[in-house]
Length: 297
Image (tube, rainbow, N blue to C red; front, side, top):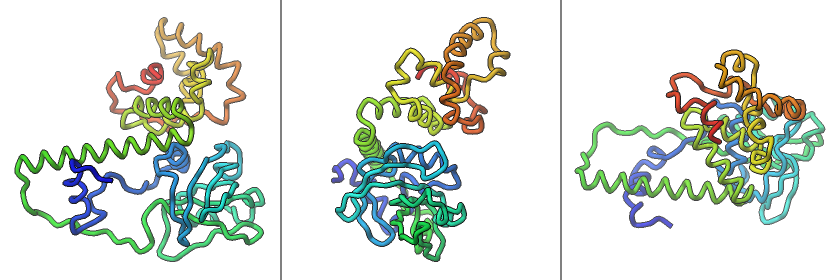
């Protein structure tokens, strides 16, 4: 339901050019790891329509797989009202299933759903090694979608109408954020959902995804334990010798305590450590630096 305060913005989004004015767009060329994190957090919802018209409702994304094989294992869903359990594969492009050799890999025989973001004009089908068809969900644009040009110029808004439109847009965004959070609560519980939301906020605009990944991989229970601080810095990839060597005496004292804990758990966590190129360090105010904000988390 759209509230009266949001009607102006809702009308602007659909008036004669639906799809041109929008709050978000399908991801571009981002890593599959980022796509997995955003899906796992519920950003793209849990109720989807398949490429063949199936009604798909995700009950649980299962276990995020860190080993070779499908991305999410042991997921649970309703497909056309029928309870289904299996694995979920996340691809940037629908053709990645064949390009990555999944159709001939027995490890992907239990995949119940392929989720992707890009597709060409021609339909591609997903199958297992046993030639079993796998339902598909495209969270990006459709094959027939065309960009709609935005006309230059137009009627100038007076102050009252402009203020109404801005307030309407704010209401729309708040409701969308609330919906995203409620989906996350349903997927991982209220405490973990809040923890991940705080982490994402601390990432500021440049590092939202790596902060979200770190929080997802640590989990609130472990992050709040006696090893939690070292775990967060270690999973983020921030406990490297070069950082220790650069620091002053106070920094080294602080890092030494983290290192003493991290060394005892690092081998077990090695597959979860984020690569350095996941982070953006340039053009940041000192207070926004990821090292400072991870300390705050």
